[in-house]
Image 1 (cartoon, rainbow, N blue to C red):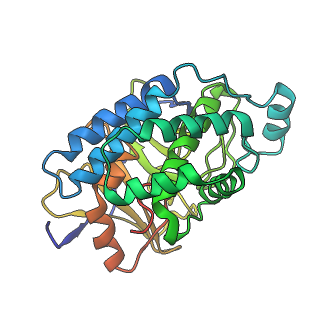
Image 2: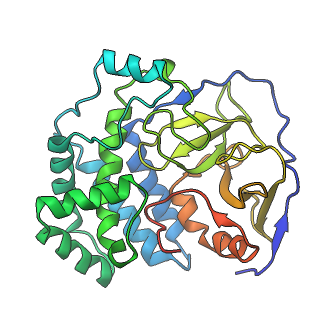
Image 3: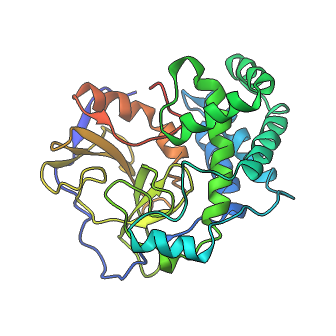
Length: 305
């Protein structure tokens, strides 16, 4: 792996075709996890993290298949959504996930994960999760939703996070994208969660626009380019990448808050996935952190790095 970082200075692709992108794009749970599984499997070939990427591909496949026959999630009613909108709040409350629907989703994920190939540590973690009582599982759910996963139980929380992604993605898919409003820098307009990364997209009508991707519910929301996705600063923004790479994944650094979030140039490579490619570019995290920047995004599959 190259040990140098090339600063990009300013973003040379910031000026593109004029477009009027939508504010938000809701996830399609019937496609999102299947496509992510395919991407992870492809990235695993010849990769230093190949075994882990293949494990995550299997988890993503499980996320896709456990949805078959799952009861419809209970989305907030119209009045609750309107109240949230009027106060500039996300319509989904991360602090109050629907217990029954989430419990079944997690149980299905645990059963499905029992049949996949996994590292030894992941096998032990799954066994501990199977033995955990309702209160212990509820505690793990709260940890993931608070982006506060304890280091000593990282592996167990991977499965819980995977179940929560399915649950909240299905909830997000029930909403009306046109009714969403901004809720603050670095916050998903659907669930209030932090971004896992951002992407420059090549979609028709939005080519060259930047969208942040929620680490929990998979919602994409439009965000101004050359602006920190965390603190909103437009000063001291830089772009760094591993020297000799394809130039499709960079770290957007901010001197104002001292953090960075990866930015994926999906308009150059449509296969890029905000979660999968974040994991696969761990080497970029390690190099940027050597320069004194802190990771500002959240990816439950990269906790501990």
